[in-house]
Image (tube, rainbow over the protein chains, first blue to last red):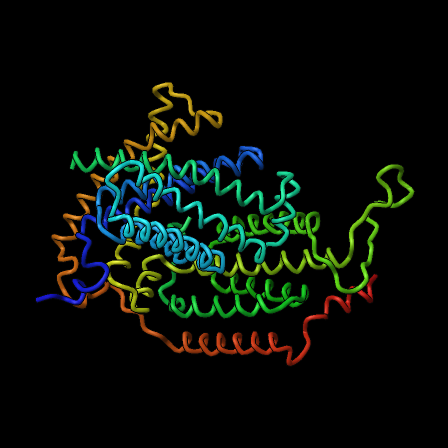
Length: 198
Length: 276
């Protein structure tokens, strides 16, 4: 007889899948914390670029790695959702709620891309394209919201980088797409090796 | 930091804390007066005192909050592009008699806007910190269960929270091993390269842990029953109901302020006009 827990979205995932997702999100969150403390030592304009690169490489490698190991629809969305939810649970405020929203959007977009193109990636190119989609929605949404929640940030960026805020968003997207693509490929390849090993 | 805290079992229900903090957030988002926002911030600080947190923790976070305030205030004052609707009142910071740099100053309206923004952010951050510091993560997760969050998701949140410090510890260990072997991790390029070296063993370790944990969970009957029991059953007490009533009042006040039933927005502006 089917229990209540076996119905719905989580039915497709085995216990191992859920644990892998949870632990990978823990790794993502933990390493991200170490890195952002370390970024304080780097001068401001450069630290932003480094943070985009490192964040993209770290996050999307882990996401695609987990997706390749588990290969079940909804994995990517669940990882992003859990990451956002964690921020809300650990530090409940308006910014973490915005963070949750900006985590859900890329998760949904990448899932949709994989669904439309016939399932989870079976080659590096698809993994890379899927991964780079995060930057396409994340940066315009997150940086766009900052114009409302922290308007001074716009002037700060324009002063520091010497470019209009719109150009700054586009630059973020470009850097994010490039490194997201690389991260997707790396994650997929490591995922294949791990899958073989287990 | 959280391990050193003594989470009181008699503290408010986490659901109530969440509702109260969101109501408070709603109120401070609707207020645009520096003086009232300052009073709100003082009220949050009083709540910090009532929470009976360890002095070490309070002083640590107060220092961080003071730094945040300084940063917010300076960046808002320097980079603010708010166009005041009324006339601009210039405050001379450096007297005109001083050569070259003399005569420079700031506009009072921008200064007021910066103070308003800084106190709003401070109130928000200190309120969120208070909720996080006085709530054990497991109680927050129990609250999620009570809010009808799927069982699997709550378990995943517990696992993730448990594994964040372990992941950090593991990363530091691997970095120490890399250092002992003479692999340089200094500089930006070195740091980026070090990620690749540390990442693979970290992932292997995480996968091993995942397998062990999955076996343990299955052995303990994870997802075997329809309604699994919990260690602690959250129940609303009289203090929780009182706080809920207070939260409703906060929301009502926010709506009143939003609809401008009575004007409390311009107290600071009026004071400023009197001073300048």
